[in-house]
Image 1 (cartoon, rainbow, N blue to C red):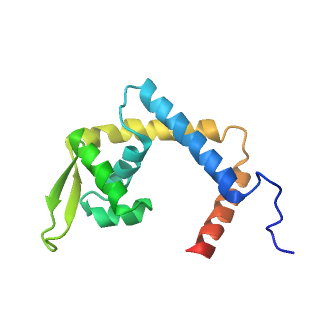
Image 2 (image 1 turned 60 degrees about the vertical axis):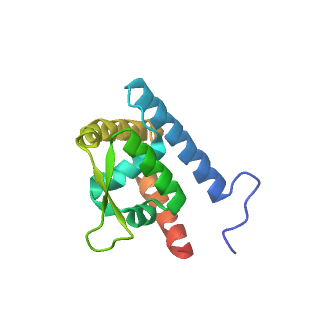
Length: 146
């Protein structure tokens, strides 16, 4: 029997969407309480740049599952905040490389601590094996649809 017999409100996308939104709101609140004035969307771009600084806007699109207009807007706003700089690619004149500024590098440790704190709040009372099961299931769902 297929695993798609759900009552209203039990769809994966609804449940994962609610959880994702709740975590994002809490993280935004935690940032604000610490005086960090960036959005969760901006933080997610910085997160990818902290992993690999100096990547193209297209690579940011791919890493963050966002479209080009969204990444352009986010990078524009991060540039205004002096957290990133655009540089022309040396190998492709049509492409810009996005580099972190020192100010963005200084934000990394504190925001990652707040992200860990937020995740701990979200997972309070959840058994570690249940977390692993959820990760496996969601990865399988993603793999099935990519």
